[in-house]
Length: 310
Image (cartoon, rainbow, N blue to C red; front, side):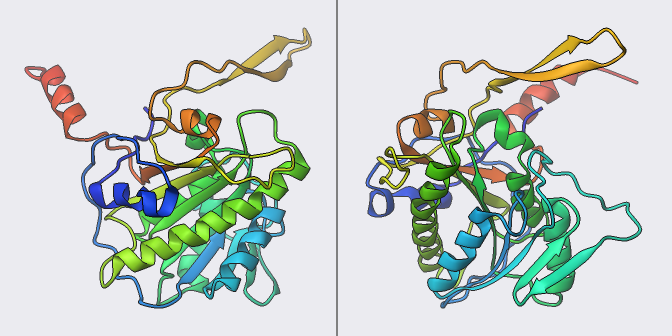
């Protein structure tokens, strides 16, 4: 079962024409609320910055520079090594975990993005949770089925599970990422992230940055031959239900199998993140930290099991 993306009215308002230049799309219904998040401060935010590409990757370093330049108090707590594709995995059962502190405001955790966020909240920010967790910007997109298995999204989910507002940031289109243009496109991605965070802070006033239990999965396209172009707009989207990467296994005849991946992109769901990114727009998809699918599906399930007995 896939984690559904939910969009309460307050989150829908984030992508108004004043921010984006485009009208938001209609998204999925709201799920059960989580615990009440803390109120947002009036000034700059205390931000825990993580990712799944590693603490020294270009995306997180650029994010640190840009968010710090915007006046926020940013601390990197991210994986020591590349943890792409680890999803929501956490090594919570391990007796020890290795953590390096190579420079001020930077912590490198020998684990997953989820481990990094858990360590950051429990140790680095002990006693006072950050105002926001930002995960990314990731090298390449996290749309559709990719989001379900993304370590970048997993880091944001770990924050949401602890009641901390979170944003996952990714940079890339649907084709194979080119290193130079993708890194260039991280500039516009982070420019938008600063605007989005400002919008959250201003709209929060004395309330929470985001609705209860809701985070945002932001996918910025690559625009222009050099990646430095401006997106065509911003769309409030949902996670397209398709998984366009299909595993391919070939028997090598010696007890092993060669593993490959086939790309099988299907028509994009209207209003989904694939459609928006393919159109050169920034996709902003709300997400929650649990597997609830909402009251409608709960009613269907209740009808399905009506009358069954052990």
